[in-house]
Each structure stands twice: as C-alpha cells, then as structure tokens.
Image (tube, rainbow, N blue to C red):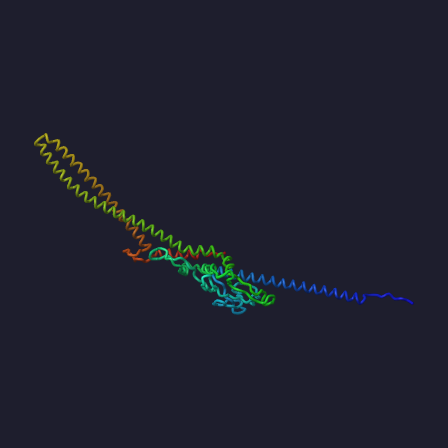
Length: 367
C-alpha cells in the first residue's frame, strides 16, 4: 500500500504562530501608545513652559500679572479680582499656539507674610522711607512713593517685587493652570503653577527693589545733608558778618577816643613848648611832649587805616551773608525764618523730590 507524506503546518504549529503574532502586536501597540503619551507630555511641558516665560515677560514690562481671558479669544479681561479664573490670555501674551486658549488659567488670592492681601493683576506703588518735608529729617514712616514718576517711568515693577518678596509661604502661587492632559484642546497637566518665589527670582526682585527702595530716601537724605551744610556755612558767615560789624564799631569808637587824646597831646605839646621858650631848661619836657603827640597821631593814622579795612570787611561780609541767605532760602525756608514762606519747600526742593521719585523708577531694570 502506498503512503503519502503530510505537507504544511500542523494545527499546533499554526496555533503557536498565531499566538506569537498576537504577542508581537500587543508589544507594538504598547510601544506606540507609550510613544504617543510621551509626545503629549512633551508637548504639554513645552506649552506650560512657554506660558510661564510669557507671563514673566509680561510682568517685567507691565509690573503686574495678566488677567485671565473671558473666552477663547485670548485677550485678557480689562479688570479682574483675586481668584479670577478663565482661559490663558494667549493673544495678550503673544502666544501663537491656539491650543493654549483651552487651558484654564487662575490667579489665586495672594497674601503676604504680614497678612496684607495683594491683587497681582493690578499695578501698585512701592513703599519707601519718607523724609519730613518740614524738618528735613527721616519721618520714621513707610509710605507709597509719590506718583506717578515725573518723567513717565513706572514704579509698577518695584511695587510688584515688593509684594513678591514677602509671600505668606513658599507655595504662594501667582497663577495656576489646569486641563485634561493629552487632549487636543488642553495639552497641559493639571496643577501647573508659577510660584511667587520663582517669579521674584526671574525678575531679579531682590536687588532691584533694594536699589529702588533706598534710592528715594538716599536722594532726599543727600539733599538734607547738602542743605544742612549750607545752613552751617550760613551760620559761619553770619558770625563773620557780626564780627565785621563789631570791628567797625569798635574802630570808630577808637578813632573818636584817639582824636581826643591827640588833641590833648597837642595841647600839652604847645604848653611844654611855651615853657621851653621861657626857660630853656624845660625844652627836654617839650621834646617829650611833641614825641607823645607824634605817637598818638600815628595811632590815629593806624585807626584810620583800620577803618578802611573794617569797612571793606563789612561790605564783603554783608554781600556774602546776603548771597548765602538767599541761596539757603531758595532751597528751603526753615520754620520761623523771615523773608520766605516759613516751613515750605521751594522750587529746588520740589526738583529734588522729583529726582528722588525718578530714582525709584530708574531702579527698575529688566532681568
């Protein structure tokens, strides 16, 4: 009987082949899903990073954090309160990615370590150490810098930094993002936030605010020191003026007194000369009398020279005193001072105040 040899796969071999293909397919699908998820996560991280960088740049330019957008137009609200929530204002931030419009953007309430509440979406003036405008000395109070800046510069960044440097905790948030990770409409992870300390560091707030806060008081304090130096110099000139007057007065009295003495000595010399004419033995006394008359006359000539010198000194002292008094009064009129508006700042002091305010704004710089 003739035998036929079996050809092809057996049932077992076919089952093994199908199982192997299934395993390969499962592994391939898993790897594909992982790669897709990694791509979504990378896209989400890139988007949140761009949002953070854009918000920091906006804060540096405007001195505040942007408000959320009310809709997907990407334009921030005109005003918003603490805890406002909406969409990422991608158009205001200059973000081209429309996908950001579907991400929820929230600006939570921000409270400082001292319990002060700040709305970081609004600009504010920084506080500076004040100078008493009447006494020209530190007032011992911290008040907002007079604003706005006279030359148009903004204090807003210094005001924002002042709030950021005093957070109630390391987790104090400036804004938070939320969305469904991996969806086409919201490619970001829930809970992404920008913290106050990070924004402060990125804006270089510590050095900038330190310079701004000191500059206002330093400028006014420098003016105060200059004014007091002028006032001290005026006091010295006043003493010199008084001394010149006293010298001239004493010299006039000395001239009058010496004129009397000269007259007396002259009369004595004539009397001694008459005695000498009658009795030659008395001519020695006559010579002495004429010598005394000559000495007193030299004193009178010396006093006359002093009169000219003291008169010139008084004229110079009067000119110096008048000039310095006008200069001091043009800078500031102390309380009780006559000839000016007592206790009121002058145009010079107003200009100094302007420079002090400008110095605060000039302390702001881009990180």
